[in-house]
Length: 260
Ligand SMILES: [Zn+2]
Ligand SMILES: [Zn+2]
Image 1 (tube, rainbow, N blue to C red):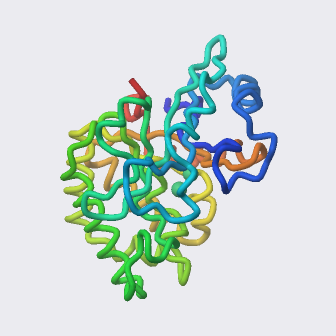
Image 2 (tube, helix red, strand yellow):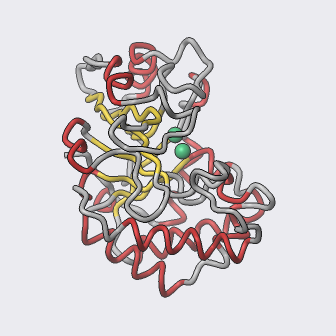
């Protein structure tokens, strides 16, 4: 049984896009303890001050800013980990320097915040075909970098932000299966976690099969998975909607990614 007893991607008021004053580590912990959770990970948006090229929105969300959340409150039976959500822009440009991975228990990497035109999305990528190619080649590039991949999670691979002109499914169904199978085999070997993002699956609608088929490639490749709310407000922490996704993918406890 793959239990929903963890949430490894969520934001607090330290993220600029979090507007719910109730999103404090203490309130998040209290909510999760009531559900019987065992693990939480705080993953606020990050742009390391040592990485050039931060957008105006990112600029102040640096490591000292994220560390304001420390020390995180701990539950009696619940471990509250300190992580971040880092931005990948292609090439060697990740918003967290490799030598700074040590400061975090977990690094959720977003490869498809493609709504950030100019930062993550180059000019001219304006069709689902072009986006599928960009998304795929980004992942291939990322896996070549010198990171401590065991503490990396791939955030919301099926998020709607990837292609707001259409749907995430428009892109996912055009992704080359051979290339993604190779990506997922490499990810499995490196010990990377694959995120099941509740809000991304909730937006799948009639395209649920397309979303599931994409994640089936990861399951077949031997990847491990974790649940995530990506919550920016307290009432978005509820992720029992992932149960049918977990069941459809046939995940068991052996398929679960664990933060070391
Ligand atoms: Zn994100
Ligand atoms: Zn997030």
